[in-house]
Image (cartoon, rainbow, N blue to C red; front, side, top):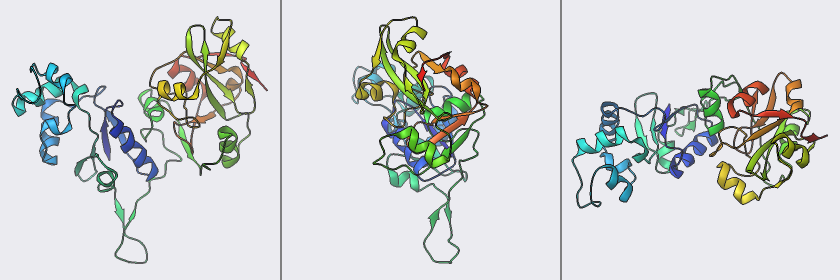
Length: 298
């Protein structure tokens, strides 16, 4: 199964979250990074029985890209639409899922997403079906969050570890460590702080606290303070408790506590609550271009 997305599209993010929740195995294709050509895009639309404007961002942006004075008065031909959207994939604003059997849907709703998930007959032989679940605990990539997409694109090996998240939990890192049976020193939490130069990311073991002074010094500054949670969510694109140091909406300067280098692999959030990534610390450092420093108080 393959899903085409534009990360800026809220429906795309919702479709990814639902696929994760259902345990579906899939690969992600970004319209902007790997845009479909006009012929491929036209064929997908044909299978969907849709016109190109059905999956486009309408209004002034599309009018400008297509050389129109306004929408919809000067609507151009279907061919012109396809050519323009292939040349400017930012215009494509709907997730398209293609199943292994070639079935394709525009994932506008949860029902549309579920319609292409494989159904497996239950052993009891009853007429109902259940959704097939693909294990993600040994995946090396491509399944679901901006963090896993970034790791896959960087050709970094990693393993996903799901666990049952308690909505009432407050200490998210400790919850993950307990659920996975790991020492607190090996699971790392992602914190965001305000520095003199702006927001920056700290990755420290859940066993300790962030030393703000040492963190600022690692970034060649003098002061740092924890950032507002709402601002952090807006800038990173993740929710508190599920903030990954990888795949953030805006790449921020990052400092990883040097204790990470003492492990062959470390764990950190995959970008949603209840899911951890295990990978070599070097992969994290390389992908986010982090520096290492003693920034944790253990």
